[in-house]
Length: 242
Image 1 (cartoon, rainbow, N blue to C red):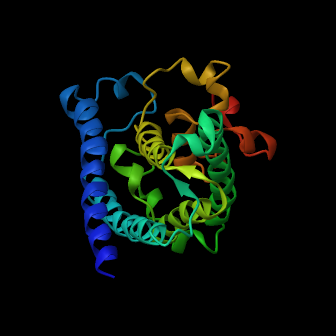
Image 2: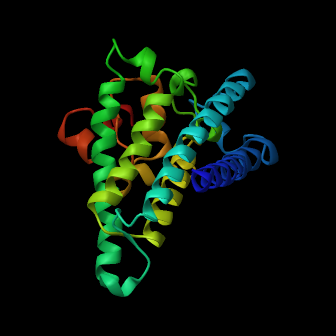
């Protein structure tokens, strides 16, 4: 139990500091240092609402607690030898190392898409996802502002993965880093590279423009990393907007 508390407080501190450094640093750079210059180049850009930013930060702190609980549990059970986390690359080889990252990213994107659609059901939205959608025009602060149930599901997904798929600690760290950076970029509030969403590759990846449409139209764009499921299941509206 003492080990769990150590992990919890350490991970809570690390995750919260990371949030303020990455989300806060990105916000400061684009909205304070450059005064929103990049965003103002877009017709649908709206200046950030300070009250909503405060609420996003409050919700992000709650999310940090939930993630820290899940991560502390994961590390605690690792010592019992019942997970499929491993240290040595030689155990499975370099090819598997790369493959495992791609497999988990795809699984996470798939789970997120379907759970995300459930979160937007009229009878569930208020309880599961409304906090994240306070900001119709998101900022980097919104990237981690997840409602408790959504945060718990994402945390439990990562725990489930390490019981099913052999995963190197480096890949686990890379997954968490990818989640953080991707979320911040997609909640930037404007497209840093405006031409990218119309590029052949950009059409298959979730961009800030793509996700911003979702914040104003709840019936479309449920993906996390890729537009694959949106295209396949008819919830892609990007081509109608651009």
